[in-house]
Length: 402
Image (cartoon, rainbow, N blue to C red):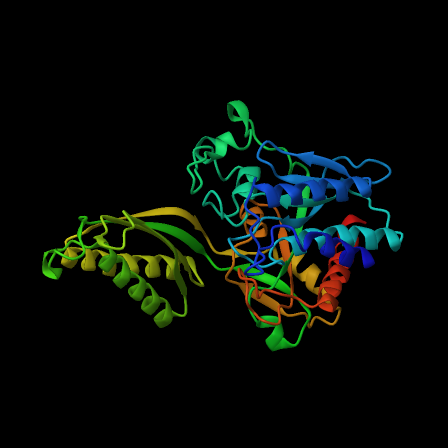
């Protein structure tokens, strides 16, 4: 188990901001590339066979002595990238714990009857090219490479110019033969804190989506243009933010405008255009649709009063996910034989949700986060809880590979 702490120390400085303490590990940039190199080294040190698909997803395979037939392989892992100025644990905890779980299984003398893989899915956060869980979506085929390769980052760099991708409609074969996926992740809330438990089980994922709001107005002089003569898109945007907040509070949902771009972005000019991104989440598909429709309706009404125009584009929408019940119960039983393991819903999206939606039975383990903060430098987990997570993951995997 000491390997977990050693691996965690190795990763701690990679991509960390000296000023905020947060992490900048965007896909195919220096910090994330360093983590990918670390992944390859960790696989080589353990004698695991490395496989990479055309989109940059990685799997390190532990094959049994007598090679399996390729069916019902077991996969675990998570992702290595982060949001902008994010926390250390979201993603890498699952990858490090997966390698540590293999170490622990070997210490126990477990001889797998089927292959066990450690996955690192790329661009899970969507922090560079704007599509959450893009790597896993490409791996299962629910995202098209023809569309994905045209995505650009904030500097205008095309995804297709960064990664090779699949030529002539070829697909990823990385998940061929995989029969189950178990992802360990730091909890992104305080459910386990409230239950006084170190590790819990994921029950399902709320539906969620990202929506781009383009508000067009008329650029003008900030000093000479009377307030009543303006067509100011910033006013429409500001009132939409307030509407989104109110709608979510009234329904127990989540809505966040966390990114905005303004043109021409001058202090002494009325802007001509505002582009903003809404992240919306609710407990059911119907509740999400109602939330988004309500926000858009209020935004349109405000635009009419402001003399601006509004276009709303759904960039990605993920339906509600219920994890495979048999696998979930198996994980819960391994975690607490008496049946007392906490089962938690999550409002955050994960690669496990993408794989489950694509028909691959998936489950999640959550490790307690005492602050409850995530996607920020304050995200944390105690070493003892992380080690408990490794033990739990190893117990689950042992049952699946035998």
